[in-house]
Amino acid sequence: MQNYARIGTFGILALVALRVGIGWHFYMEGVSKVRSRNFSSEGFLVAAQGPLADNYQQMIWDHEGRLRLNQESVNTLFEDATQRAVEHFQFTDEQQKTLRRVKARYFGKNSKKRWDGKLNDVYAEAEEEIYKYWQSVERLENMETSPTWNSVTSLQGQQAMIKTERMADVRDTLASIDAIWKQYEGRLNSIAEPEQIRQAGYFYFNRPGEGALSTRVVDKIIPIFDMAVGILLMLGLLTPLASWAGALFLISVILSQMPGYPGTQPTYFQAVEALALVVLATTDAGRYAGLDFIPWAWWQKRRALKAATA
Image (cartoon, rainbow, N blue to C red; front, side):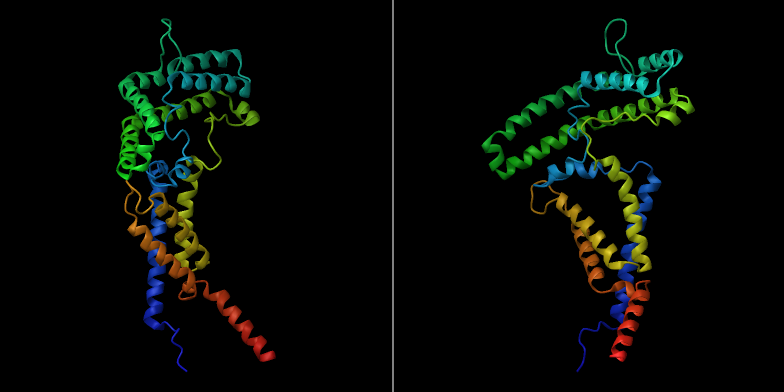
């Protein structure tokens, strides 16, 4: 009886080409993220739409910017970090003098009791945008408690548009605050002597409320994940595992833009590639011109030996 389950030579060649092609795509995506040196998943997570949007955006520290756009709160955090760095490294009197000069350049109040320094220059330059931001926050809070705004699809889309525009206006400001935050962390550590760092360890200017699975962690994992999946697929090694991992990742991308939800972006390309990965995962694609052939052949030989013995 003819075995109609066989895929034939051209089918095998197609599977190999599909596996290598998708593997190359994943690998190059990972390489490009590493080479850019500034890859961030924040833009992708911020753009999430649909009922799962909150789950994605919770991975972003202060994703709505409410903490960072509160000038007094941020200055307080910088002050607290300064004091903790003194205690962390046990700075000498001379180091504390240097620290006071650094602090004056970055934040604090001048002799006229006005906010001063690089951090507060950012707030001064974006004063109008920040004012509009807080106005939109109040407006959106009123919308979210209104049954009308939450029951009409077109009005839900308008809410999403207001949120997007609000964040677009302050995105550069938030990026500047993040950059100064990182710079200040580096300056605090630069004051310490090598021996102090060796004994006390690197001082981290922690961001309050940041979860374990934050964008800083995700941004380190994704490039490695992409390259690992790509290499495994191209080699045909652990193909089912790599294929399912890639498919689930792409499905998470699709769910971030829930199909049919107002304001979502099309994810057809991700959907097609996810389906192709499911095909690779369920057809033993790695044993055709791949390293998965080695354990498969060993297993077949063992089965044949058992059958012969029986």
